[in-house]
Length: 331
Image (cartoon, rainbow, N blue to C red):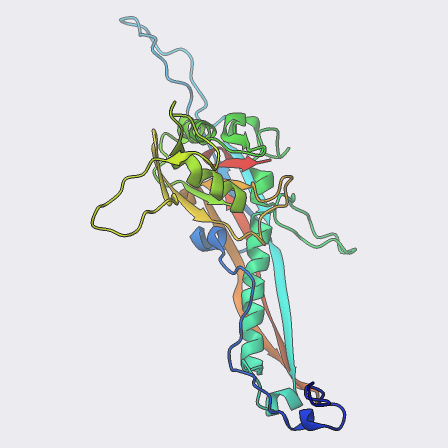
């Protein structure tokens, strides 16, 4: 039989004398990596609509020229040039700590500096989710619609966007439907399609969501006939006899057209699909960047008596310099 009120600190009894055991450990249970934002080239923006031009080469000609033939027709070498662009979007996170909270001792701690740092971490996730999104750009209309940038998911579309000429859109072969299982042949098909556009895939990086990443790791599992198998199958791996570890994940995928870096996407920032977590972006950092109109920073506001407060913000957009230089995996 236990004593009365052993664990009750609100009524009389021995529980009111129990000391609190609260450690100084503070754990944030949320993914924080931002691979799309982190790998992008950073450029300076000077307007709310950032634009760039794209051009292409004509198909190779194998026709010969007759001896003595004069030049009677001339080609406009810039007839196929086009202008692409994206709108700058503003991001903001606010923070505040009361004067009493600033004064007391707390776990973490929970002061204004920590509130500011946490807001910056949240802001980076906001930017990552928007860059990876499928939304189209929007123009500020002064009536509630804010300026918004077009995400990677909308840029990489063989049927659009409407303001991207067909010659510069992502080829259909560079967009794979993962369904409920993604195969190695499908990945090679996307890589080969990108190679046909750029002639190079050595800088490709695959930002893969959770389920897609698992499928790619399973490319090392084969059955007796050399085809991919289920969980009950056998993995074929190269084992170093001097090591006690067998690595089954794939970080570098060597394709017929170059080596692809495989990185984990932030699952909180990738588009929602059915089935879930099957989105991946096969990007070439040389052909996309982030243009910053307002760099990420913090602004403190006047303390009106309740406590310190402020906000962190930035304004930027995504520049996809050639949609055909990238690929997409979705479901």
